[in-house]
Length: 317
Ligand code: MN
Ligand code: MN
Image (tube, rainbow, N blue to C red):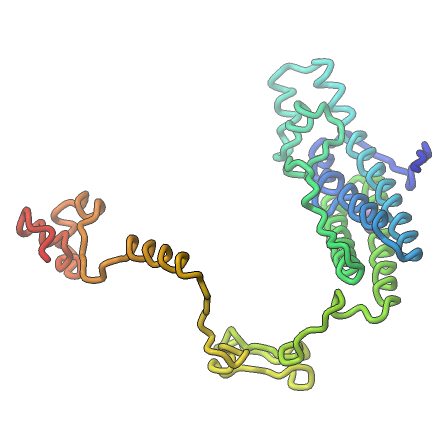
């Protein structure tokens, strides 16, 4: 069950109305790296988790993320409060009101007019929240790695928001939320490494011929060696022939079809075959003025130019 406590996880103080800042903060309310996405990510993972330690941790963190959602949503509502009063009560001249909700060069007019200044489940650009933000796959070694990356992204967004905020109370609360993402990242990492083995994800081992191969596919100036492709860690394959048909086969696609499937497939190929000896007149050529076609010697040899020089003989072969 869930229970609600009326005290926030962190005290929030907002010193002045700022709809533009409120809109930026929506990124962490209804955005892909936001608190709702985090809460849903860990909650759904917890429901399916059978390991008691991971289940408990996921429920703890999911519930804390909902508490962060509450903190962010509260800040958004407070930053909008003054503007919401003004637009709802219509106390300003229309032009003045228009300027005050659009003036910061952001989309705060959308939140003001459409959502009445409340925290909308959108990102800072107005994109609606959606469950596609959550990429859980139902395997702890893969999901924990994804959770670690999600916490890293959330931390970065908070850092950017902190740098865009001059309201000291908002800065402080964002600093707390950012710090908690660091703590979560550590818990997820500890949980990942407390499960042995944890790599590669899943159960099937990789094919040993390829698990430690490094294909130097992009070649030229800028080729670089490091631990990610060192001879100590990898078999570094730079020869183009060795990069192709690495299974030792022909490298050509092979397909078996039943005779009737094959007959129809061939019929389709025949019907749509191209004639390499043709040089068909195109609409673009028909539309060109005569001078333009003759200016370029390369163009002058085309079917189009021939048709200009000898009208009616566009199709000469
Ligand atoms: Mn959070
Ligand atoms: Mn977190």
